[in-house]
Amino acid sequence: MGLGSGVKTALAGVALALAIEPASADTLRWALTQAYINNPQINAARAQVRGQDELVPQALSGYRPRISLSASAGEAYVETLSKVATFQGNVSSRTAGNNGIQSYGATVQQTLLNGFGTANRTRQAEQQVSSSREALRNVEQTILLAAVQAYMNLIRDAATLNLQRSNVEVLQEQLRQTRDRYDVGEVTRTDVAQAESRLAVARATLLTAESNYTTSRSTYRQVIGVEAGRLDPASPVDRLSPSNLQQAIRAARSQHPQVTAQMFSVDAAQFQVKIAESSLYPTLTAVGQVTKSYGSTTQLSTLETLQASAVAQFNVPIYQGGSEYSLIRQAKETLQQQRVNLDNQRDVQQQNLVQTWGLLEASKASVLANQTAVNAAEIALNGVREEARVGQRTTLDVLNAQQELVNARVNLVNAQRDRVVNSYGVLAGVGMLSPTVLQLDVPIYDPVVHYHQVRDTWAGVRTPDGK
Image (tube, rainbow, N blue to C red):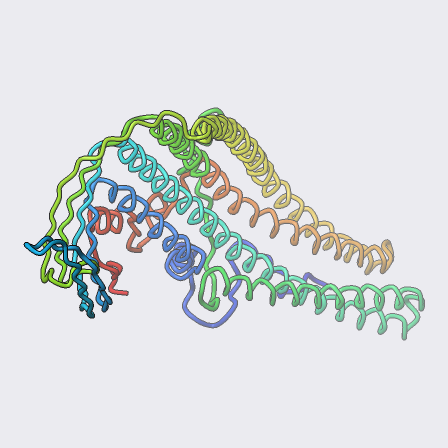
């Protein structure tokens, strides 16, 4: 019996991404574009960055005046007993009555000196904003890599499913031929049982492949944001990565978004030390007040009162219970912690990069080895079948050769999937898995736009998008 055409077709689908549905083919670049636009985790991270942008105008508010208006109204009962000197001597006079009270005022307060506290808070907020942008870049990398994995997993599981279906068809034909040969006395009942057993195992494996394929389609929908169509083959992106491991390590330790985010966290911690130290410096505040009052709570005869003042308040802290010194020490320890975290993050990213680099090299070799294995298994199966026809091989030998070929093809599917995914993994490991580097046909989200929209805003509750 010759090799079934369905098996050959399945192998071709491994390399060229078998058709999932009879529709126009989707490419990996298209899938990455959809993930960049639709994935909710990326959109949530963008909203978080926009929220962090507001830290800067909050810090800048320390440079701006604080203005408040006040008003009060009520009624007071006033009773006054006074002594009046006359020619006849001192005479007591009593007055009593209700007095309507109204008061309106305005206060303006401006900080002139606070030990550079406002300046340091602004710089700290800017570092925190920069750190959040790097966190967004890391989320984008994570989602794009997950999209690559979802895309390639679906191709792999579709090809594996087709291979297992073809294997079942071949084993069904093998069982039919074995029964025919048993009927004419060429083989024993044992041969039939072996063929039946191998077919039952293949059917169970097919059910597992169908389950894996269904799961991969669901994961594709979750990550990419759309239902999968027919998937085109994907190519590795080795050309975009550093040419050797040492260059890749240097890139991972300096430009991976988790490393750069931690760098900004170190800078923010340094400014926190300066903010804590500002509590030891003098403060100078200008306060202006205007109050207009109608009526009085003490004199029935007072109709109106206008008061205005402009005062400069200078305060020199001497001792505040020791909390200010504790906060400074605490900030310094936090700064040391952030520096240690930065060193650790660099080591973590280096380890991840080296591991992924090793997996990529292994997958390259695995693809070549499994291609050789498939070719050899095909030749072996054809030879075993021819030998079995002349009685030099048993049915079990044919079944084993068939299983070895299926296993080799499944291994090739996995190796080709790993080859592509690991190339993207290396690109992510050096911090370069971005829509710009991949040249995706999609508007690139720029967090700086929103930052400049809100940075110098003095008032207003609407966000730039009108909410």
